[in-house]
Length: 404
Image 1 (cartoon, rainbow, N blue to C red):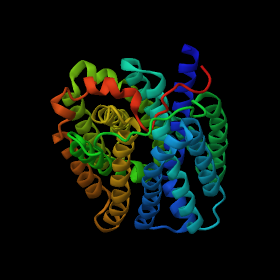
Image 2 (cartoon, helix red, strand yellow; image 1 turned 180 degrees about the vertical axis):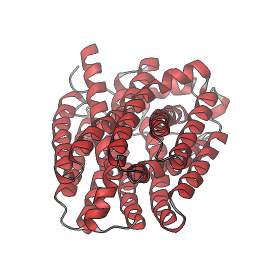
Image 3 (cartoon, rainbow, N blue to C red; image 1 turned 60 degrees about the vertical axis):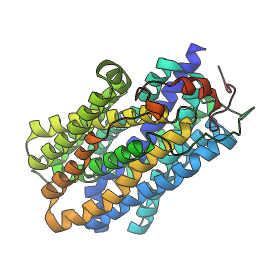
Image 4 (cartoon, rainbow, N blue to C red; image 1 turned 180 degrees about the horizontal axis):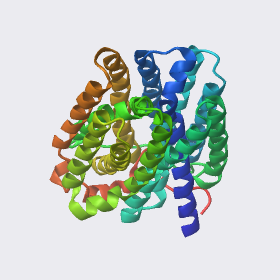
């Protein structure tokens, strides 16, 4: 039984690494060489990046419903298939138009992946262990970014080969997920959650939106800012991306941090840390020490924030885990979609430094949002009603399925 839990966590983490670290954020890593290859302006780079986030928004709106009808395994495997397809399209793209479609398809995979994995974990791992498992799987983004850095460093000028490797890794991971995530749904509760919009929803949506806006400049344009800062810029940028991913793995400690310092302090500290890292990168893009420090802080803070939002959503929606996670992650991607297009235009008009600082300040305002839970309960603690109805999530099968 314990072995199956570890397999679920490991394969889920690997799927998140492929969908987020490769398929979603890999575009920003290769943005400079893609811009040269296809003659793209910063505005166009931003619009293409926004397409990936739009695909995410569309997919996550359907993913929770599909998890209900098909079960976590089928939807999680679908995410891997879509990621593989999108990255293959990028690798083979002959024109900027095909590239844009590939980025959109690849970005769609991230929206498909999150709800079934959250549902599978909530179904099989309860209590504090479940919280820890959720944040560990969420930190797969950092692992993916960490792995993408060295590949980009070696094959930056041969970017098609790099994206081909990403696609192969995603295909192998998809096969692994098929054997480890819960399978056929045997029984599903059809009762809808009591209220889809409830106490705490406004704060969750606002915090998620601002997190998306505040993070997009680094994800979509950070690699380019560092890469143009000197003769060694490309090498420094690839190393910084790897450092960012490695630090992001620390985001798996988000649940433990909340338990130690409380949700309010954890949220404020991580939000301000991400904004400070973004500003540091903007003000000193040629200082290697500042670059590495900013990359490490940003990586840990961003993954930590998404992990905190994941836990926040499961507390506001204890009886509908997939709905809560889907709502939060939809708003993160919506903020990133808007932000990518606006940031690209802003860089063309005002320069990267001004744009990075403005977006960092916008993201910092999320620190003012107070984590909340229904009926005045502790923000990040399960409510009595939540514990009672934890197994009644309409997006989670009522019985354990798959290998155990």
